Image 1 (spheres, helix red, strand yellow):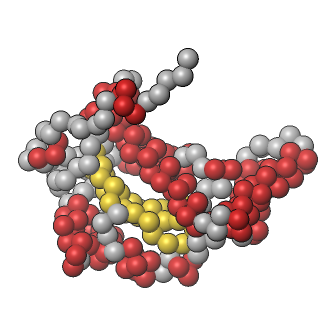
Image 2 (cartoon, one colour; image 1 turned 135 degrees about the vertical axis):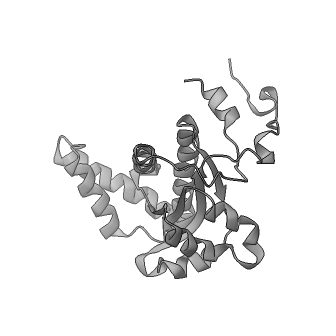
Length: 218
């Protein structure tokens, strides 16, 4: 695996081939990428709405009407669409739920380790809740970490993708009753395979040179 080649091939797909679908095996891998993404203190403040069906895409595409119509085809013509959602709070009951899952998965050899993990996670959450006053923004950062991992991971599978903030997030919240569930939509990612006529596939990447963005200490 050559990560530079994979990163060069990856781009924001503008046109998807409606005749090519992602295999069930690759969808399984995509779900694994979503589950296994890193997050600060392993808080995992996310939820994902996925669909491969016409009906499901139509529901998501309601957020691409009006001003966002330029993204409608990117939802309707692709193989798989994912709505990335963030939690709106991380209260004690949720953090205990995370803790019990960690315990179930065998992460704590002793009760004291479990107690320390809970205390440490609460310290960081409280810093963002009370001191920085950006708890939801902090959790959304973790969702974007997940999105980045997904984009690189699917590129390694030979799957094309486009992440989109250009959708009406309020409509997605309403369509899927997210706020009632303590969630809010933050972005949509469409995945599939590029169409031969996609102009963006043939354009060279444009990035700052290495020496401008990397300071290597000696």
